[in-house]
Length: 354
Length: 85
Image (cartoon, rainbow over all chains, first blue to last red; front, side, top):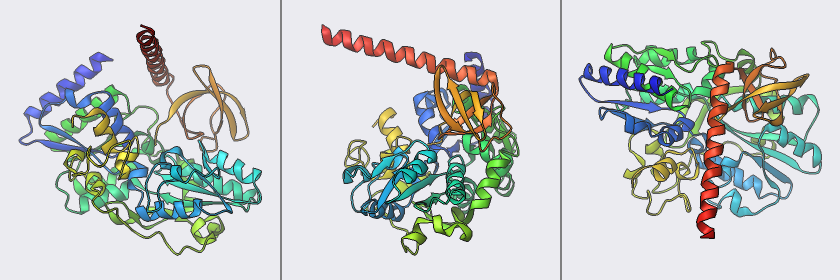
């Protein structure tokens, strides 16, 4: 294992001698952000290489307007709100789910648990706060399909699901010259397949390399990127191994496509990304919490003073935000990047120097 | 949020299965990986198998978990010893 890390390190160093300028690599996945800190990856890299944390933590890119709707629905007497644990501490205008102290707010580990709640409580409507990228979306899709086929009428989802590739395109399309290459998310790519990044690599001529989450896999991912940069290439590559194929998990893709359609939805810090969000298709509208509770749309809102949006675009590092480690800490977070354990600010606070 | 752990399928019925990782067993869905058989090793995310994985890769992850668990045990024991002093 150490040999492979050492070899990757040498490849990186050799490539750096052939590059005429420093490079910035964005890791798109929050799980990567945490793994990079935990394994001390930065300490193994030459100074020419800078790692940026991108918009890959689902909680962090979830717009303030969505959080406010979740809080509003959670406050209703006729609703049980089911959510992954990540959402509990994210602040909206009316506090957080955690601070509502309602027994009808339930943390679930899978969408199956949310469906079971609906079966157990026929007098309430279970709303599942469906956030996450392509890794998590299929589970929401299966839950809606299950609810439809078993006539479970008291179940619906509030879709905050998002797509990784449109976000990468939006970041580069916004003339963001800070990003030279992407390290693509391992488990999103299990579903999507590495070919999904071809439009990004081809249109913008930037290396897109899929990597796993172990230290050696991350180092090999960075090495592959550096090698491409040194050779003037901008291609799709995977160093993750057997789990990621060029085509991805076709069954999961078909399930998502049957249930959801892309639309231009709001992202924190990035605004409305064309085709970047997913909503239920009209034929499944009865399982859409927006439709069921007569909410017209998710409004785009921002928290004042919070720089999470610029952090997510790689424009600043967390310590450059005036709130970081002063007003905003993991114990009393202001922005979602500090709330989420996978947020860039939380990771910088926990592992970085400040 | 996109964490996934490797686990071995030890039982299967329809699109439901029992997964085992280092002796821990739990119920999962195999709706997204219909080709999976008992004995296969899969990546599990939020209660769903998302892909079949290589036995060797899975073993590496399990060994890493084992190492972390042992480290944690030692750390907790050391902390307790400190308190007792």
